[in-house]
Amino acid sequence: MGALAINSRKRGNDYLNPNFQTPSSIIDFPVSKKPKFSSMQVTSSESSIVVAETKTNIASRVHRYPEPSKPLGKIHAPIRKPRFSSSLPWNLGKVTGPGEMGNFLFRQIEEAKKNLVWGSGKKEKESEVDIVKDDLCVDEVEIIEDEGFEVVQGRSVISEQKQQPIETSGDKFLSEKYEEFANNLVGTSSMVSDVSNEEPKIDETGKMLETLDLGLKYTGEPVHKALLKSAEKRNSKLDSLAFQISLMNKKLSSFPRPSKKSEEDVVEGLFTPLTDEEESEVSAAFSLVKRRKVLVAHENSNIEITGEILRCLQPGGWLNDEVINVYLELLKEREKREPKKFLKCHFFNTFFYKKLASGRTGYDYKAVKRWTTQRKIGYGLIECDKIFVPIHQKIHWCLAVINKKEKKFQYLDSLKGMDTDVLDNLARYYVDEVKDKSAEDIDVSSWKREYVKDLPEQENGWDCGMFMIKYSDFYSRGLGLCFNQEHMPYFRRRTVNEILRLKAD
Image (cartoon, rainbow, N blue to C red; front, side, top):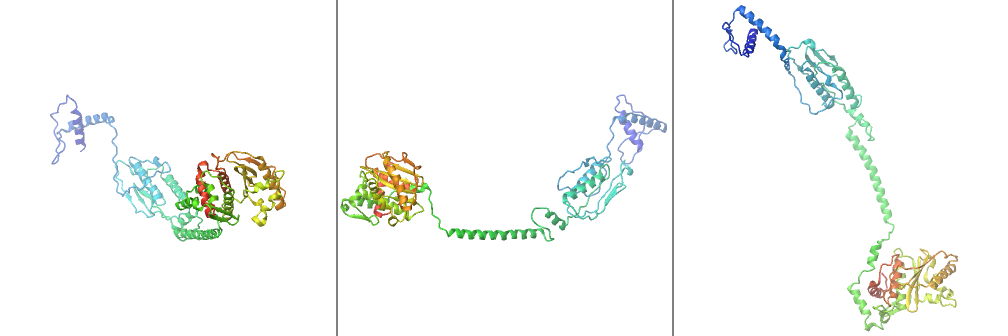
């Protein structure tokens, strides 16, 4: 076989020479049934010469070609495909061996590391790795004997891993195992096929749960049952709180709460159109048939309203004392009917200020002293937030207000007029009234005297009375004066409807 290889190589090399001539003395070697290569027969002397020349040529050319790589040894062992990819926490890539052994060892370390992290807890069966020795000495394979690992003469046999209880948390356990593998395997060329892993015990799992901030202490029972018991305890506390909340809601519901409407809703209700029935009643009250007929009679003020008196509310009419006084009485009754909805107010009639200013000096408290006794009105003026006083200036109606709530004396004139005597007389009257009825001395010198400028203005010569009673209506509600001259026709008909029903809305 050696001669055959040499001749084949020599013939191939010589054939590359263009001056090559086939020697006649060379004959082919006898071959078997189907020879793959043809050879020539030579004598012993010639054969020695050829062999010598061939060796010389081979020695001169062998350094031109790279060293052929050694073939990978045959492996007879099951290799599991890793389910999860991960990387080693240490630089185990330095582990090398002769030929392909270093790469194979690194793959086995990777698989051992995965079994530590993701091991199913089952002991792996023993596996054998057969290495076919091809230009590899047995001496190059080191023998490792360390806690269940045994490698002898190139064959690796992994014995069962000794049972070791998990005494620390998972992170510390894995860290110790990685350090152990790094110390044993770095710098060697040994091959490890697999590492069996321990299955965490149930008791250790319970101890690990104690590190969580769940307020639980491991007692040996299943974890899900412990969590369920903890949740049931919390549910009982929640049920107790829910019962207390429902009990407090029932107690609060027993207290009456006034239904308050927003200012926008209240203002919108003040401009609600009359119904068809109400419009018909108003039109009938203005008819000539009912001019002398008493339509309504107000008992508290002893005022009777006939058709003739009510006709002043028609467009272009001047309001008379009866209509103004009845309407102001209805405003007072409205406040008594719904005290939480309106301010506490007092409404004087159209004759009060005439009496007060009838004296020689223009002020006479004694003339009106008995108008506000406790027996007549049932309360003292000092208790009121606002006191409304109609002022008749010959042929023009105005309104004066003693505003205790804001500590003001206000004068409202739809024609923007001013009268200082009215506010001076009302200031003196309030001091005398409080002293007479309550025996208190009050000082109103710091109270503001205001002639209201920002208010709806009259644009004709007959709606002053309507402006005056609507000033009283809106102020007693605590609302701003959000109307104008265009609303006067509607307010006239609405006032007729309220007087006919003897109820102010």
